[in-house]
Length: 187
Image 1 (spheres, rainbow, N blue to C red):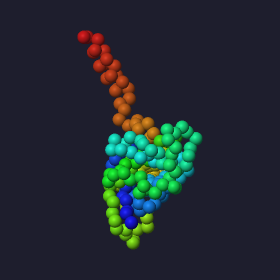
Image 2 (cartoon, rainbow, N blue to C red; image 1 turned 90 degrees about the horizontal axis):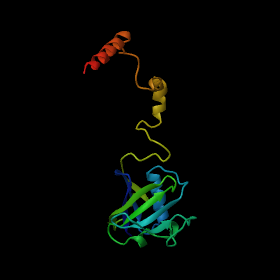
Image 3 (cartoon, one colour; image 1 turned 180 degrees about the vertical axis):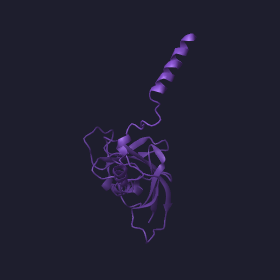
């Protein structure tokens, strides 16, 4: 049985990616849920794959379900399409779009085909995680949930404008500025 390894890049940042191994007999719905799990996204939104070429142009659509939108050609349904049937060459590419309102776009590239299945792996599986993935509904801090605790402990909101009153010269500084302004009239 062939094991396919896909690299799933975030469209905006190819340094952020996840590698997923999956059997060629498993379907696109299995791949869809594994991508969402790998990027820590929920599964509440619409999703679709597009068969693609080397230039990431979108071709035949493989959709989670038939949505109420115009199609050039009726879409294939993820749960009904084994991945192996859509592999046309050794570096096959797909474009995966999730949440049509937020337009999360991932580039899916076949990077390896293996004939040997590992008994230690439960397919499909995430085999590599590189980079900090995006937060589905906002920004993700490197500190994560602990930032709120730090902010509260040190009351970081107090100096929100970023400048305090230290170092300001008071009246003497104002007079020096005024004198400098008067000197400019001599030109």
